[in-house]
Length: 67
Image (cartoon, rainbow, N blue to C red):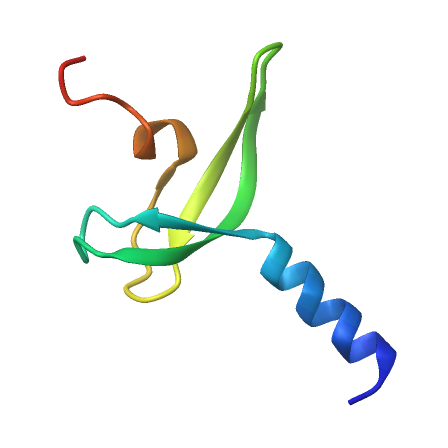
């Protein structure tokens, strides 16, 4: 594997987070699919579960159930 391939794979890995999936109900890697908005306190990202393909925003992943 050459350096370009390794760099590409590292970029792909850097663009993922281990999160609990609403559909799978398990901790799975979620890929950053696109930026939905930039705010002073955060960047809103569209996340996709790499297991089942379910998509939702990063903020939805971190909302508290009592909200």
